[in-house]
Length: 201
Image (cartoon, rainbow, N blue to C red; front, side):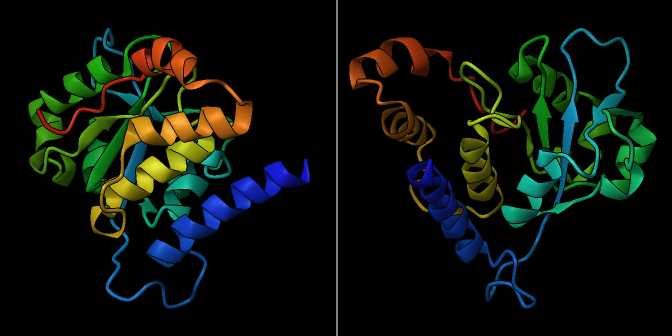
């Protein structure tokens, strides 16, 4: 148990040090872009989405990864809260990270990115509406995979601080070191499930 704790702590510390999380001044030259994590599906008939509570892991991950989670003041509840495009526009996120537990996150993100209303946001203009990575589980959830999600958010928000970041390599290290799974099994059963990360419209 102690070695697992150290494994996680070392990786969180590396991210925090790179982006200046947890310090009053932050890291030199690092800005904290506005981030919005939403849950959506590819089949929704409108452009409303839901946002997680301020106390949930998604907000903590966004902060630790060097972002400013724009939704936290609006959701002090204990569950996902539905918000419309008007609210999203007022937040004007620079990055939108889309999760979808019931369908493809990539398709849901693509649907939002193709909407004129979402294209008017800073994230839409920059092509920064992206699906949250997932393999067997979405990487935003409060299970063991969150450490992968944290690394991905940090590299997405601050690519200059994480040069050469490789999503597949991160997953491979995770499954080998945390679960002792051999490389052949990871390559055949895990990596093919890794959801694509859309980089633009």
